[in-house]
Amino acid sequence: MLAMIAIVPTVAFYAAYLCDEMNWKVSGFDALRSTHAIFAFVWVVSTMAIWRTLVLWTLGRKWLTALITIVPFAQMIFARPLWNASGCMDQDYLRHGQHEIGIGLWVWLSIWVWWGWEKWNMNNQVEPSARPPSVSPTAKRLVASIGSFPAIVGAFFVTAVFLDDVVGLPDRPASTYACTATLAILVWIIIWRRSVVWSPRAVAWTGVSVFVLLAIPITVLHYLFQLGGGPLQALFLVVPIIGWGLWMALTVSYWPAVPTATSAHDDGPRCLKCGYMLKGLCATRCPECGDEPTLDELWAATVGAV
Image (cartoon, rainbow, N blue to C red; front, top):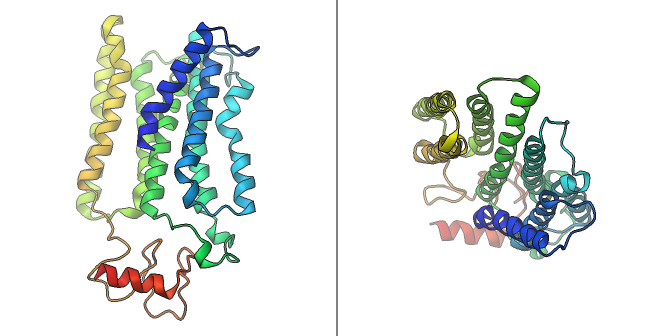
C-alpha cells in the first residue's frame, strides 16, 4: 500500500501521456480526465488485490464495495470542477483535487465496508474455519493513514483554488497551508488516537508539534510569497510536504503505543482482533468488537505470547 503512493500516480500520468501521444483518446476525455481514469482503476484494482484474502466477502460487502467504487471514478464520470474557477489552470487544479479527495474517501469507506461491519452481525452465520485471518486495528489505521495522503493533497488543491478564486485572500500559499495542515493534524489524531497512551508528556509534545507544524511553515511561506515568484515558487509545495512529513515522524517518536493484543505479562486471554481482555467471560465472543475466535485459537495465541 505504501508503494502505491509513489507507483500509481506515476503509472497514471505516464500512461495518460502515452495515450495522448498516440491519439488513444476516448471522445470527451482530455489528458487530466484520462489520468484520473487510469489512476482510479490502478488504485482500486491494486488495493483489492492486496487485501482480498483478508476480507470476508459476504453478499452485503460485495454490493457495498461495488457501490463505493463509484467514488474514485466520480471525477472521471462528471469531469467538472465544483465551481467555475477563473482560468483553465485553476479548473484543472480543482478537478485534480476533487479526484484525490475521492481516492482517499474510497480508502476510508473500504475499511468500514470490509472490516467495520462485524457490529452489524454480517458474519454470524459463517463457520469460524471459513473466516479469513483477522485484520488488526493497527493494520486498519495504517491503511487509513495511507488513504489520508491523497485526501490531504486533494484538499490542498481545492483549498488553494477556493481561497484565491472565491475568498480572494492575498497570501494564498500560507493560508492554504494553514487550512490543510490543520485538517491533516485532525485526521491523523482521529486515526491514531485510540492506539496512543495520552500521558501528560504525549499531550504536551503533541501541542508543541502542532504549534511548530503550523507556525514555522506558515511564516516561511508568507515570506516566500512576499519575495515574489521565480524559482521560489517550487517551495510553495515543497514546504507543506516537508511539514506534514515532520509531523508524522514526530508523532511516531513520542506517542507511546497501547500494549498489543497479547502480552507475556497478561494474566488471561485477549481478543485476537482488538486486544480486549476476555478473562472471566462465559464465551469467546468479544464484547468490544464482536469477533468470536475458537478456544484453540485463543489457547494458541496465549501460549505463543508466553
